[in-house]
Image 1 (cartoon, rainbow, N blue to C red):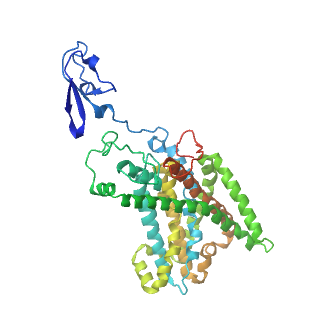
Image 2: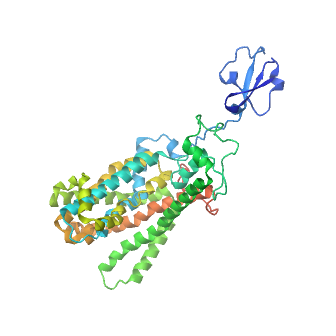
Image 3: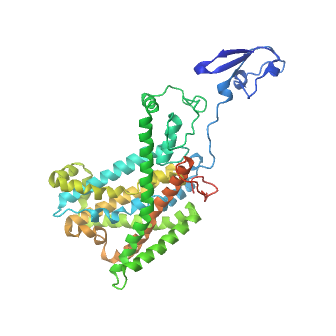
Length: 443
């Protein structure tokens, strides 16, 4: 038995004795000839050199989870079911944004060019942030089909040697600096990786930024259900003077209790209950938007040209910049597409947004802009004012139900983030209940 150095610092044992079976090293070292299928003369015990590598013997197998949606081969019907379910879980918050985006804008004396500029800002924000950033780019990044800020941070820590006093536990083997034994990575670290590994200050900045962003999303998940349901229920006060604020608050509390008790049924049952509401909602706002476009201002879609954004800022100056806080509300809840992906799969999220959510929102915002061009005084009540009179009450009921459903996207996202936080040691230990015996991410 001869020991010789191998490639990349590996240790190779070469056995030349025909009876080397008794000297076979412990630990399950794997012979290279055996791996290549060379079995000639093996039964006769012919003397020939046999090399065995420590890196091959102790190389960890790549994780191949069987219960995750990204690894399953789904039929067209199963994918269609997931697309339908995602409407009620993922897109509730993002889908109900037409309720408050235009009414949140305060721009006295706005005219046609101003409304076209605002619509252009909304269209490009939706396209660049939701469609391009999330659907086409961010959804491709995952840690074993877990998405979210913590999931990407966990993936980063698997490829970068974090060290020092960090608030997140280190799960990476200190002896495996370049991941030679449990990764397909072969090339040397990049300059960015070397810089990050040398600087503990930079590592701390990354970690605390991740923790801050996650805390903000968790805060959004705690506030959104209360605000959404309270805003929806307050519409009752406009129909009867006998209904006081205390009655609205009590009804909101009851609805929230029922909403959170409903979570124990699991993602699948909750989504099948909420998805029909959101499907009706998206169909309604798209049809009403198309009606308003045809009736009030057919060329409104010319706002897709970004030069209207320039005219908007050139005319309104600082006042125009102040309205960006209201315009950015058009993508509120878009982060749920990434955080909720453990409950579904990438294809269902992408197809649902591209074929249902995105076109519906474009038509809804364009219809409101077309209506406001002819009725600029009704900016503060743009959504309900733009609804045709015979459809007001049906849409009031649908919008109220949709606002209640809107909280579900961040509730599901919060559950996923808490689970990831527990795995990284950033959250107190809690019981994680898997509500599906098929899909691991549904908790």
